[in-house]
Length: 174
Image 1 (cartoon, rainbow, N blue to C red):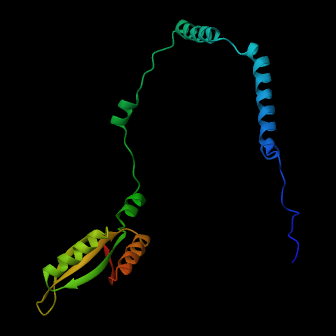
Image 2: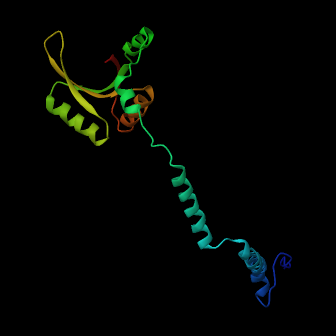
Image 3: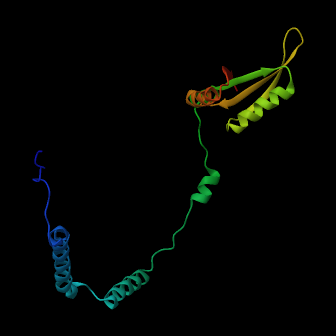
């Protein structure tokens, strides 16, 4: 049989050597803090001295008799006019497209309502749109949206996909 490797095993018979490493820095820090506090105490001003300084500041401000502040922006805002250039007006008129996800299309309103309720349970805002096709049949589309960005479309589409619901992306200008 081979010998056991005993090089890495610590032998501490008293148990105090394992506890000592934290005690020495603690005692040193305690002594240093006490020493600094004892010698710094005479240099810290008393509370009464600080109160006297604050009272002196208040009386000096009262003696200067500062002018009363007048706020004129109330009147300025009522009479202000803002010029808007034509280029700013044109950029505001450009409409961003809104995105919808079609999450189903049913001939029965009951089936459409059931699908819409499932989507609401998934925390997806949905609505039913009634469409009549060229042959006169009525279909009930379930639309998720409107969604403002492609990122929201992607997260909504992923949520639908996780729940085994196929979707179709629709882009409409609002």
